[in-house]
Image 1 (cartoon, rainbow, N blue to C red):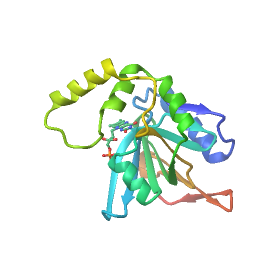
Image 2: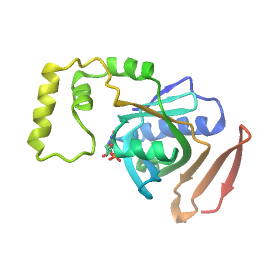
Image 3: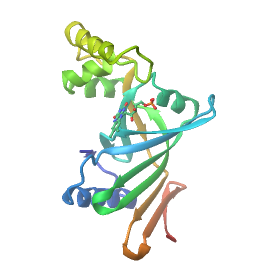
Image 4: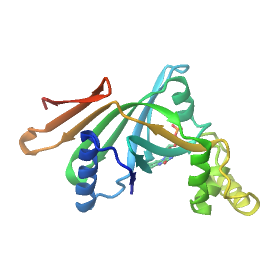
Length: 198
Ligand SMILES: Cc1cc2nc3c(=O)[nH]c(=O)nc-3n(C[C@H](O)[C@H](O)[C@H](O)COP(=O)(O)O)c2cc1C
C-alpha cells in the first residue's frame, strides 16, 4: 500500500489517486511496486530496479533504500530518473520523469523508529548489492544484528529517496489497441495537459 498524505490537488495527482483506488478495488496486488531507472555518469550505464513506493506526500514520491547501493551512487552522479508503474488489474501504465534527492535525517529516523525490528535488522545488516560468499553468511549477519544492535536507530547509510515528477504519462490499454495516453508536463510551475497518439 502507498500512504497518501496531504496529496497535491492538481490534476496529475488526482488522476493518480483515482487510478490507484481503481486498481486497488480491482484487486491489484503489489500495488506499491515502482521501477526506478537511473543513469550512472561514471560508469556510463543505465539501470533499473523495482522499489516499494511508501509515501506520496503532497507532490513527493518517497521510497527507502541503502545509501551505499549502486542505485544511490547513480543518483549521486546524475539526479534525473524515470519511474514506471504498471497495474495489470486495470491495464494502466504510469510513466514519470523527475530529479531525485535524499530525505532528511529526521524523516529517516522517524520512519525507522516506527518500522518492524525485523525489517530494520535487514536494513542495518545488509551491504546492499555487495558480493558475499554464501547465503548462510547473510542469515548469520542478520541474526547477529537482531541480537546485538540498536534496531530503532536508523544508520547513516540507509534512508529515503524523494522525487517530484515534472512529467507524467498515463497510458490506459483498450481493446482494439485504441489506447488512451494522457500527458502532463510541468512548464513554469504549471501543468500542461496533452493527449498523444497510441
Ligand atoms: C517488488 C520489489 C520491491 C522492492 N523494494 C525495494 C525497496 O523498497 N528498497 C530497496 O532498496 N530495494 C527494493 N527491492 C530490491 C531492488 O529491486 C534491488 O534489487 C536492490 O535495491 C538493489 O538495487 P541496486 O543494486 O540497483 O542499488 C525491491 C524489489 C522488488 C522486486
